[in-house]
Image 1 (spheres, one colour):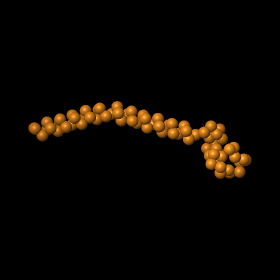
Image 2: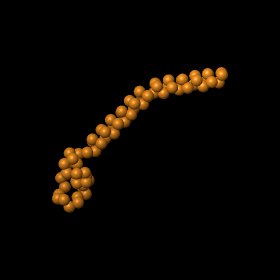
Image 3: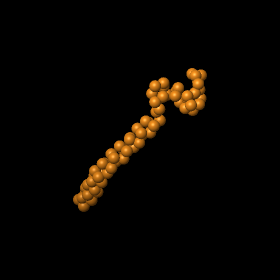
Image 4: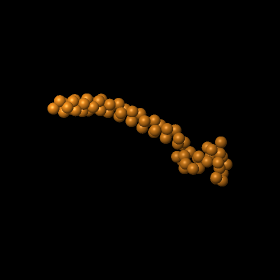
Amino acid sequence: MQELRRWFHTISKLRSEIKSLQPDNFKSYEKVRYMQSYREVLSVSPLDCLLGTSISRSHRTGKSRGWGTRLN
């Protein structure tokens, strides 16, 4: 019976700890999602949106595919 009480106490403490950590984990998750979306926004230029990724990247890197002159 004594061991059962210890287990109950341990489980109660762990549940309490989990409950206290959940909001912190959620905040951390939201920060990571924000940083990922911010990085994605920075990696897309207006030229990507208008002409397509492969064309504008070729202009930015200087690797022309024969579609005219570079814009730099």
